[in-house]
Length: 537
Image 1 (cartoon, rainbow, N blue to C red):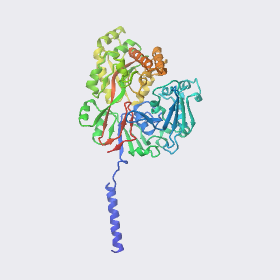
Image 2: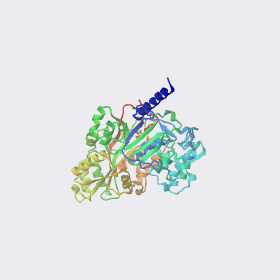
Image 3: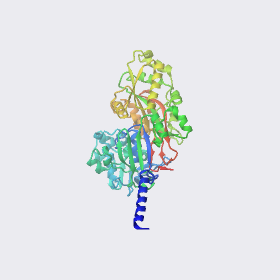
Image 4: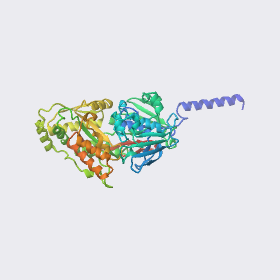
């Protein structure tokens, strides 16, 4: 064969390969390259773990960051950044030993100083961390937050780069569980000190978890890629994760069924749930969470406990879970949900506490409203219910609006707001009744009981204070006697129900749409989702 013919044949082959590549025929996507697309119902409020307080924040952050401990598939606490630890006999001192191969996404080692900096800065009132009280378990943590102690007095100290010494205010049975919670995640000290706005640009975000962020188009999507510097990167099989913001349940179902997303954490419309379950598309997981409404105790007419109690009693929770939510939820006749242990092994806190009021108690509700001076709802000031945009919230609000009208003779207007605006409105107290829900952060009833623990009404979104309630919470926090702790928490729960500063509606479940070829996604009963070991089958 002449060199001219050989050259012509080679050029033809090269041209053919180029055409095939241009048509997608020469390149196939490997499992590691295939993006895992997940729908979430709101844009995160931010991605600084110190400042986060919503489930959507945590969905993303728990892929980007890792604490001293983690949770395994059995719900057990296991080593993460800390490879081991020791606890003093009195339960007040913990010494964590960080693994040598723990690194940030920029290649720097994760140090004990990063944890000390993160925790101390989160307790600085100037940072306005919404969940700073979670750090009050540290010795002098609360005193520092209230300007009654110095930063050096806080019970966290980097002994050296890989040794972190922690001293607590009192023995805390669930402290190791807290170490896997976002408020206790480390922060890359050098980055945060050099650039206070480091979380505003993906290019300046430094992470220590399985994934790192590459793009954040607000109210649209967040893209993460595998963090090759992560100490356990060998177990990370997914190369890219895309969180897609979608606050419309029907749209999320449509995107799932047309293969635009692989997982939806947006609960589907209740009318679709039965079909989706039969088609093996929807999965229901247990969840330690309560969906409820909150009353602004400082605004008329809800500054009157009898009015609050009337509204609390005048709804049919059984009808709501049977006819509206339809996803394995249960009527909430208390605040603390099922799934948390009481003092004795095998006992459930909710079952021991029992039902704290009667569901759909219309007779009592009408009587209380009349005693408050508003018989049949006459003379009651205008009432507005605030909820954040979302199909489930809208349908529930309309159903409860109808129940209050039918059972109390009360006209209630509905207002919905975008998630971040809604959170700020509720925080500011610019509402009368507002939607709320709480999913536990650790496996102890205290994760629900201490939510309103303050003697200052301005410190919580219900603007509620009760000295006896606060005393009982403190007793439960400081006691080492499990029976005494649980007794105090049962009494504290009864106070907030009797004061009717909240209106529990149902105990939640987690309803997820997930493709059958997505495997290895870990979910716990506290709503956390871990993609570290997720893979395509």
